[in-house]
Image (tube, helix red, strand yellow):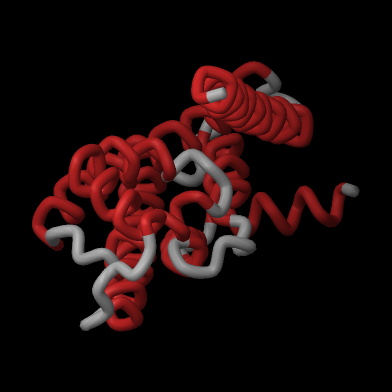
Length: 196
């Protein structure tokens, strides 16, 4: 265990950490099994003791998320080019994204796998790139702040024990995800019941 902690401390103090976080956050935008949020939370835990610096961590995580989301949007745009909606579901999706696209994009950033589905869909359905960019900037920055600060506060709470700080940070992040998914499920269920 001490070897792992020593390796983590060396990684957190090294210059490559920021490149690693940027790369993971970028890949996570279109390949959602990459552990970007875990990496940012982990780095946030160690930031509580001084290494890495919190503000550059937030900046590179946000920049990586922003770039990754734009890659996903471009992939969706390329796949959807010239394809008019052929079903009521696609027509509904296009209407929902046109009406509430920015809100959907910001909320989806916090749903595992949701951000990829939404960014691909927004590209495929022709959501305006300028609006996508503006809302995605908000989503990327708030996600990076949220992830880094969860880790930071976990690291502060357990300053002498970064493993417990990491576990606390991950538990909080998972709890938020469970709450969001529970609310989404309850709303969906209520809509189904009201239609019946």
